[in-house]
Image 1 (tube, rainbow, N blue to C red):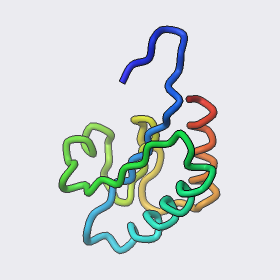
Image 2: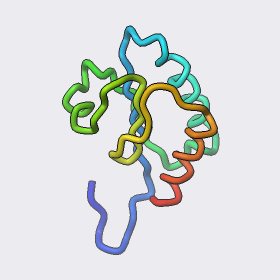
Image 3: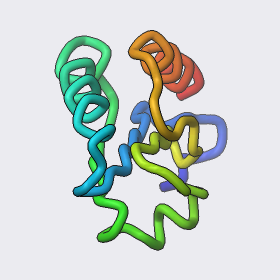
Amino acid sequence: MSSPAGTRSMSVEIELFYAPWCTRCAAPRRRLRALLSGPAGRALAYHERNVLENLERAVELGVTATPALAISGRLVAMGRWREARLRALIAAARAGA
C-alpha cells in the first residue's frame, strides 16, 4: 500500500510467522495478542501466519526459523525474544509510521 507523497500511513503491520508443530511459538503468540489488545495495539494490523500456508511471504522476508516477527515488511526477530524487546520494536515502528 502506498501513501501520497509527503504523508505516512497510520497503520503498522505486524506479522508473526509460526509453525503448527513449533513448541516455542505458543508463548510469543499469546504475548503478542495480549500486548496488542491494549493501548499499544492501536493503529496496528496484526496477522498470525502459518509458515506453511504463507511460504512465499516467509521466503520473501527471509524467515528461516519460527517464531519469526516482521514489522512493516521487515523481518525483525526469529526464535525467542523477550517482551521488553517486543515492546521496543513495536514502539519504534509506531514512531516511524
